[in-house]
Image: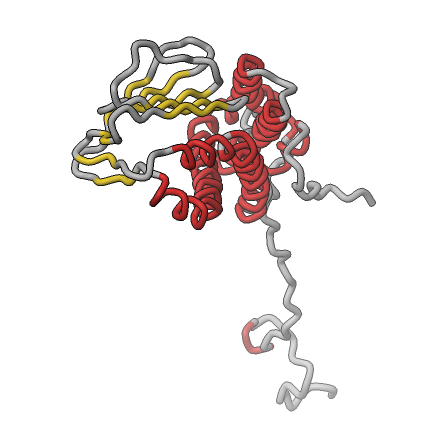
Length: 288
């Protein structure tokens, strides 16, 4: 006799694999989400560690022994400037101001007297961020070298945790948004709960593609433009799964009706006036 039970959901990389999550438990889906979120977080932290942290280390060691950001204004010794550049990142500090911010790296951080300018080699313009008011931030090697040396790993771990939480929140929100097209594409094959699970599981292939793209970018096998193309693909890819996975989804198991059991309880003969008694009827003429 063939087993008609749906297969267990364990991988969200094929259309059928994503479809099986329609009838999977919420905890199973959450475990898969955590695995993929951790994969992305580890990839991002690895990239930051090997691409940005070395530039930050060298920039901190080149800072003057005194300096701070106080009252939304950077104060450094007169004439002090800093420039540090790597394959992926460039840091410039010029309290006297910039005549032109050199956007020679994929990420450019330019600090002047009152603001941080963020740019890129793509030449899309500069994002200007004023320094926070009411804060006092150390901006010298005397204080930052020991602090960064003691806390850099904690900063990276916190950044990785933030990535995990942001992905879980984003996938949950996209699940609510995308369950409507899943319901349409499934032709009422799945209920609303199953549609939301499919919508969430459909995000996992894109996460895998983006992780591979970040690794190739960190290994200098992709440039920034190619990485942006990968980012676009990872946004479009879930829609392919949203269209084809619902039609492969197993139908939710129907609750089995309890089998009616026939009771063979003996009836009281006195309940039916037409039943013939089995014992002595009390008729004195019986048997005569």
